[in-house]
Amino acid sequence: MKLLVLTAADIEKALPMEQAIEVIAGAYEALSAGRAQAPQRAALATPKGVSLFMPAYLPDRGALSMKTVSVFPDNPQKNLPTTNGLLMLLDHQTGLPYALMDAVRLTALRTGAASGIATRLLAPDGVKVLAMLGAGGQAWDQVRAVCAVRPIEQVRVYTPSGISARALAKRIVSHFEGIAAEAVDEPGLAVRGAQVICAATTSQEPVFEAADVAPGAHINGCGSFTPNMREVPVKGLAKPRIYIDQMEAALAEAGELIQALEQGWLQEEDLIEIGLLISGQAPGRSSAEEITFFKSVGVGAQDAAAAQAVYTHARKLGLGHEVEI
Image (cartoon, rainbow, N blue to C red; front, side, top):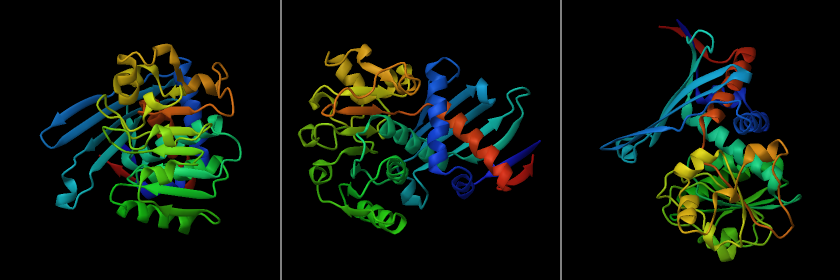
């Protein structure tokens, strides 16, 4: 059988962020409408890390995929990346694999696109200041997705050490004309006055104070993905309107929401799938003062849709190389 192998660079060329946002919006709408299969991800722990397995099928697009991503925290000591992974596309009529691609780059792209969708639908028009909490593998795509949908003029980046924050700020300035970016020494300096806040960390405690969030701000939380992680101070916010990827995934993995539900601060009916907002079946922001929060743990439907779009565009552009196995 022949497989088209696509690298991270191929993915970047094949699917620009603006197109990725539209692709992921369609995936979310299909998921909430029941036109997608995206079983809960399976996690297998080993002594040094965890491997995640995410299958999905979108009949409307003929997209059938399996993604595996592994997170091994000690890898940098061996000069290896912490996160690694592959995604395989299969023919939905025969089951034959036909493409293999870098899952780490694809995941960052589709996760950023998800925040872009939420920001486009929920953030006030004309917002200019973005706070970025975290500067790891997801942060760059969070920034460029928000900048794709709002006229951002200033980005403030915070990380505990400041090293990766300074590197990200430098990258933003060099990439975006007319956007100022700086690393700040404490989270409050990033969050206060910001109209869009993105958190992309694996923290078990909130990485900023609820009191620093301005009325009318929109928050994207995409880093935490287990019940014991909690990067956004949901319970401290002034009753935010909360949107999620998928109800099943949020109830199983979104630590901020799980803990708030267990303590009775939230009810399940307070959670709105973003796909219902996209299709017009759920309300959006109700006032200029309301705080909105999109909590993304990631679902396989995003992977399948993004991978299929990458493959289609890569074929047209002559990207990747074929191998026979």
